[in-house]
Each structure stands twice: as C-alpha cells, then as structure tokens.
Image (cartoon, rainbow, N blue to C red; front, side):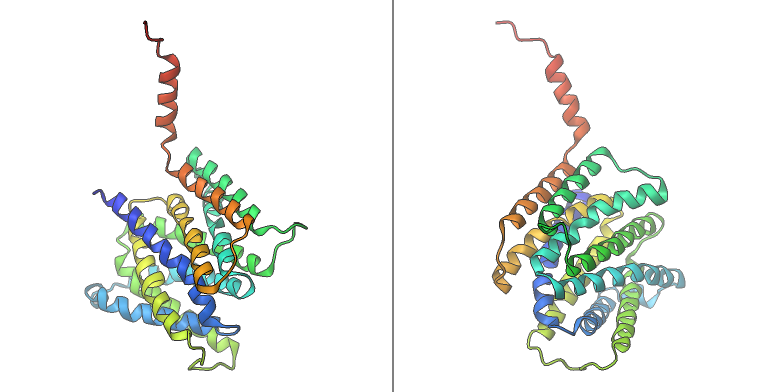
Length: 301
C-alpha cells in the first residue's frame, strides 16, 4: 500500500477519535473546566509522546524546538476556542461547524501566498460551506456564540494546518512533535492561571476519563499522524478528510449524550459528505473520459 493511501486510512480513523472527543470533552469539562482540561490533556500527551519518540527527544535540536513552539500557538488557540464552543452549543453542531476549516484554508492560501487550490478543492469547499450554512445559521440568520467561538477556532486551526504543510516541506516534523505539545501544555497552564481560582482535582467523574481518551487518541495519535501525513497530502485535502469528523461526532453525541439528530443536521451533514467525495474525484480524468465518450463514433450494427 502506498504511504499516501495508508495515511488517508489513518487520518479517517483519527477523525473518528476526534468526533467522539467532542462528546467526551463536553461530559468532562462541565461548565468551567475547559482550560484545566486542556492543560492535563496536553501534559499527558507530552509525557506519552516523549516515551514514544525518546530517540528524538534525547537528540532534539534548537531548530526543532522553535518550530514546535511556533506550531503550538495556532493549535492551542484553535482547540481552546473550539472547546469554549462546546460549552455553548451541542457537541454534534460544534463538530460540524468546526469543518469550516476546509473553506478557510484555500482562501487563506490565495490571500496570503497567492497560491490557488485546484478547481475540485474550491468546489468541495463551497459545497461544504453550504452544508455548514444549513446546519448552523438559524431562521433569523443569526449565529450562536458557541458557533462563533468554533468558527474563529477553525481559522486558527486552518493557520496551523498551513504552517504544518510549510514546515513539513523543509524538514521532518517528528522531532518537533514533543516540543509542540510541551508548548501547548505550557500555554494552557498559563490560561489556567489567568482564570484565577480553580480546582486542581475536579470532582466531575468524567474528567479524568476524558483526559485519558483525548490525550492518547485525539491528541497524541491524531496530531502525530496529521503532521507526518502532510509530507504526502496537502493541507486542503487533509482538511476535507477531517470532514468525516462531524459525521462521527453526530453519531457519538446521539449515543453518548442523547442529543437528537435534526433534519437540518442530516441534510447539512449529507452535503458536507458530498464535498468530501468531490475533493477525492479526479476531475481531469473524468472530463477526459466524458470527452472521449462524446467524440467516440457510434457503433455500426
């Protein structure tokens, strides 16, 4: 199996972990534990990955540390804002709105780097945006504070993915992974201190289970696979693969939190899934086959 296809499968598996993590996080953080939850999540991920990548940790270079620190800033901002979003809206809706990253990435690349994405990526992005509009925009064309937090977080996450793609083009990102998560832990600890009074050992029975799940699966596993995979897969395509996340998120929210799945959520989710298919189509090959079929002379009977 080609590395590209292997990482596609591993990324889809990771989106399942991410989708489930929306419900797990909502159960774990309660009303006021978002910063503390993220600190322990990143701290445990750092410890686990330090053991996994001990060879790289032992011989880490200053350049890798600096790059990891730079990547950590948009990553923490994106995850923190989306975690705030979960506290103000349903886990299923938050997971779908987070998918707007797929639209933001090609726009940012065009505005900042004057680099246009392939036509099929734009078609997929616009289709995904329509799906997100169906899900999140209310009847009076207003948008909730939870959705707003999530959308701003999606901008930060788009910047993170673009930076990962840039960095992976010039060096192996594996040595940067532990410094990145260590920086994430430090930044979220500062957020905890900024909140002032906090309970070091939360009483919420789901808190520590959520920490273990999110640290191991939706943080250590997924971001490691994501960073490595962008040596073979573009940021736009990675973001579109991430659109599987809300599908898993909606299913998890239904079974874990008992959230209802509305008709709007199903319709918008279906449109977003179509966007994923568009992104994976080889349009050039499809159009060439179509042209050949039109120009082919009719069979003589």
